[in-house]
Each structure stands twice: as structure tokens, then as C-alpha cells.
Length: 267
Image 1 (cartoon, rainbow, N blue to C red):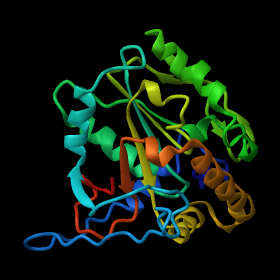
Image 2: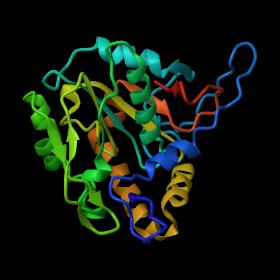
Image 3: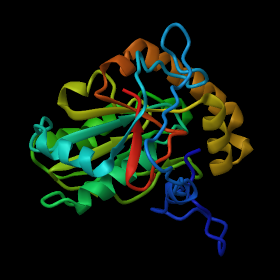
Image 4: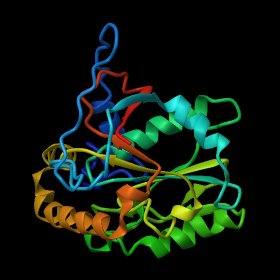
């Protein structure tokens, strides 16, 4: 699930090259626009407000709405900086929901806005010390990234190699910027929400999320992935993430839109 693409010449995994790039391209097909008013389908939820097969409650929702990444970027830039001088965008959700794609497209939109600039994007998967560090990685994120930026200093972190089973030498710089995006499971946890300018939850049905993960990283991850899914489900329930975030996004929308520039808001 968190590997880096193999170098065909050596069979080794290239440092600094991430499988997310392939994922963004693979899921970047433009859905055809429909003439006239776009008809929205309501996602299916059970009586507790949980999206069926989604793995995380999204609370009460209305009719899905198409919105633009550019508009969301302007909203972020207009919001207050709460992590020092940085506007933190926390993109949360279960694995395979589409968090990395959402974060990348929001970063693209911010880069195109006047006074924006492309924000650094930190993937929490890169900070985990293996599968058993699913939620206990947070002190590392705090020490290497959040703490320095809060104090107005550059941050830097070491990227974990899921193939070698260790943190790679060298660091990835995280310069102070008007906006920083942190993406990953538990990125919008209660600990950080007071410092987030925008907290987002991306959701998708569990069967689709499982298919995406296996396509990306192979069937060998299934035993660990099933344990991971159980852990993240328990976390979202205990943390109350869905009720606390500012925005819930459909990571598997059926409503016609241009996925490069638009997303579908559930709440």
C-alpha cells in the first residue's frame, strides 16, 4: 500500500519516487459533462448516517454538490493561519478513499491562484514506521513538521521505505509557506483540528477502496490491509472525525464533473 515504484534496471525501489503519482494519473479520467442541470444521486447511508461500505460515518448529508478546487483554494487563502503563519489543510479519510488525489489537485489549484504558490504536501504514510505505527506516528510529525512551522522555522522529515523497512537517509524539506497540506489517515484528528484552517474527510465505499489498494500495491498486502481497515474504522468512530471536519468529499462520485478541476461535496 505504501511502496515506491520499482526501478526496472535494479529491481530496487527508487528513493523519492512515489506510487501516488501513478494513482493520480490512473484515476484522472474526465467524466463526461451532461447537458443542462446535473442530476445528483444521494449516496446510500444507514440509519446512523454511515455511508454503506464507506468505513466512516459522514453524518447527515444533503444532495451532493459539485465545487471547484480553485474556489476551495481561495477559501483556504482567505482563512486564518493557525499553525504559526501557515494555513494547515488536513485531508483525512480511510485508505483508498482518494485523499492523495484530492490533496494533489487542491495543491495544483493553489499553485495557480495569485499569491498562492504550490504548497508543500506531507503524506503521513511517509512518516509511519511500518504497519504497526498506524496512529502512533504523530509525535514524529509534530517534531519534524508541525512544531518547526508553528515557530516559523522550516521543517524536514525522513521518508520511510515500506520496502526496506526503515527510514531513508536524507530529509524532505518543508519550508514555511502560506499553506501546507497534510494528507493521510488521521491527518485531521482532534489533536490538530484547532490549528487547521480546513479539515477535510474523503470517503468511498469499502469494496472500491480495497480494489484501489490492491491495484496499486498488489494482493500481498491484504492481510495487513484488513487489519489496517479495522483500526482506521475504530479510530474514526472514537475521534468523531466526520462530525468535526469542515468538508466531507465523495471519493467515488457518480455525479458528472471534471475531476481535474472539480470535486463533489457531500457535506
